[in-house]
Length: 84
Image (cartoon, rainbow, N blue to C red; front, side, top):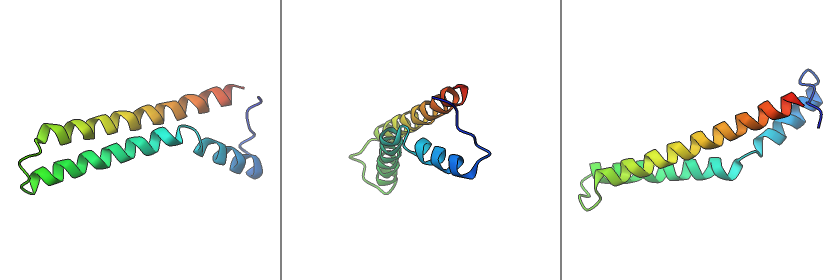
């Protein structure tokens, strides 16, 4: 597949739509897990001692790692697509 001509507004818009779909489920999962981890940390800070702090921080860390994996997947796709 030939790389898109990013100087052409129509092709740039089409490529933007294409790129938005790359690793979409992975990005949404990473953001969701990060939000869940942040919520666990917040619940611990608000006095819910039954939830250990390490659990919230661990879930938050996993969410950040998944989000970084999604970003790097999208960047690799872009690099390969531009190479042609």
